[in-house]
Image (cartoon, rainbow, N blue to C red; front, side):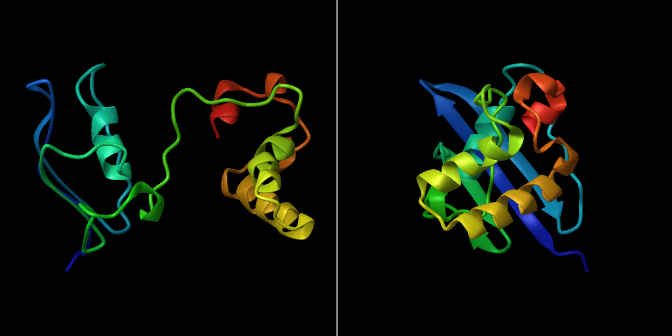
Length: 143
C-alpha cells in the first residue's frame, strides 16, 4: 500500500471573512512528484505558507509523514520554501551567494566549502559556481 507523505484535510484560511483557501483536501504519496497550479489569487501561496507554518489555518489539518503540524513552528518543519522574489548579491559569484549565510553563521571554512558544493550539486549548478548573477538565466538564478 502507498504511504501518504502529505495529507491536507479540509484546510481553510480566511482573511477578514474572505476564504483564501476553502476546504482543500489533498494527499501526496511518498515518491510522487506534485505540482500546484492555479490562477493568480486562487490560494496557492497561502496554502504553501500554511504548509511552511508562516500562516495558521482557520480550519483543517496538515499532516506530514504522520505528524500533525498544527503545533510545529516553522523552524522545526522539514519544509523549504523558495520565494518567487529572490535576492542575489550582484557583485558575488554563485558560490559566494550560497556561502553568504553560512559565513554569517560563522561555520568553519571547510564545512562552508563542503555545503556549498553539496548545494551546487543538488541544483545541478556546479559548472556555474564562478559566474555572477547577470551571467545566469532566470531559471538558474532561481535555483
